[in-house]
Image (cartoon, rainbow, N blue to C red):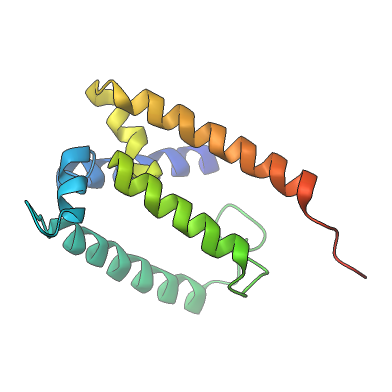
Length: 145
């Protein structure tokens, strides 16, 4: 139960930060990408603030704790290589973000604003996740032992 309450509070804080920064408005995000037109650099400051908080938090948590509060161990990625799956996934993410003006994380708080495009975007993200998982299990070869 504490794990669920913790996730809810952290998600709420994230949503509040995204809302206060204006990043749930797709026009604001798209203006960041419009360098030759109505460029809005505020997204750089939002990302910089997020990176600073995350960097500090990771240094504090990993420096002082051997395990998370509500789990027995940290769930860290085992792969560290930059492979074609990572590059393609990042490219698809960036293209989708640039076209729609939504980051998947910011689209959830934006559902409450009533933009008609937001539920369509969330449905497309879910469909993309399902398709990617299907493709990964169907088309990837098992690693040689």
